[in-house]
Length: 65
Image (cartoon, rainbow, N blue to C red):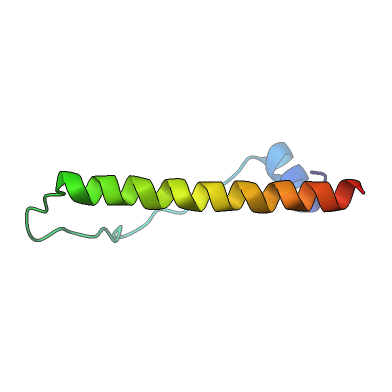
């Protein structure tokens, strides 16, 4: 990328700004994930990935024609 921000940062060096209080989320209870929940999450992620792959393939086929 050749835009002014990147060029200026590379020549002059980047500057950081300290953060007063980082906002972190606290888990108030000991959360345990059950094996069936993990299996469901993996199954849902796999299905989403397959759908995305099909969409990407269809897009590539349309753009190549």
